[in-house]
Amino acid sequence: MRKRSVLFGAAAAVMLMTAGCQSKYEKVDVPGTTAETVAQAGTDAAAQAGNDVAGQDAPDQTAGISEKKAERTTESAPTMETRDETVYVKATTLNLRVSPAPGTEVIAAPANGTALKRTGDNGTWSQVEYDGKTCYAASGYLTTEKPAETAAASGQNAEAGSSASASQGAGEVGLNMDWKYASMSKINSGKAVLYRSEAAARKNKVVCVNAGHGTKGGSSVKTQCHPDGTPKVTSGTTSAGSTTAVAVSGGMTFADGTPEAKVTLAMAKVLKDKLLARGYDVLMIRESDDVQLDNVARTVLANNLADCHVALHWDSTKSNKGAFYMSVPNVASYRAMEPVASHWQQHNALGESLVAGLKNAGVKIFSGGSMEMDLTQTSYSTVPSIDIELGDGGSDHSTATLDKLGTGLADGVDAYFGK
Image (cartoon, rainbow, N blue to C red):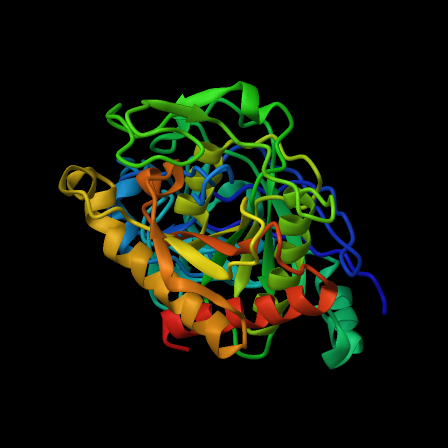
């Protein structure tokens, strides 16, 4: 199969950088620094984020982002100098949104080379006309010269045919420290990778796939358990009553000696391919053995770039207990704390959908399929977010099993979004 490189503009706080790729993907060096997003005019928004993919000493939730994320930023429409010119998109998946801020509704994701009329510019943001609407786009991803590579890239994609990768391209995205809760992260120099699906029926949804663990030095750093500084209400890797937790735990070791972080990464890659084939864009938090992103940073990225957040884990026990999700504790004070108060029902609903998908795929389910756990991830999440435990240290993690798990998880995502 031919390898191909395509520029990729990240959704919500768009950031175009080197594409991290695996097998079918080829790394692409793309300019870009911190978050630059695109948006349709008219709406204020307000920034938000979080994530504690729990360690396993004890069992511990763009191309189209919901309007409900208006809490992520306080930035309003910028002042523009008048322009009257044609510009072209030079980064595929440049999303047009309702305001120049993360988390606002996506109006469209015009492809590389798309012509737009620019009516305003301030050096950072451009005001453009698209389908009769006034929108915003990051100026750095627009050019007055039509990209010469557009036609070639299109032809190459067509040549690849149905057997080609379901991802058009990839772009690295880093943590924007202006996002809500980002300042509470302690390890945040790493990059996640955002992929765009090339499936015929795109879902206009971004799924954050978070391979648990895999941050060197994460166990020696601590982050705040809750945004408001209150103590944990359940025990896990970190005991109840604690106000800080390890930034990223090292994870457990399977009975056969395999580190959990290695298996979660393999699982994430399987799930990524299945989701891309079904039309979902995918935000991969980790694609290597080490990504320098702590649990808060991972959740902040998911909050601002994705429509849901799925963190992959296996429990530390060795009894082959089956899969389950970490549900939001039924503790009044915890469920009253923001952002938990506004999102805990979504978290649990996503968990129920994922477990149902796994069960229907023939995966063994533990007990009732859930276990209450106060996680940093849940405590900071503003999108449907779940830690899914896909078994434990005694479970099989062969290629065939990971494929079955991937199918069940993808089915659960479909069910959650009603696809």
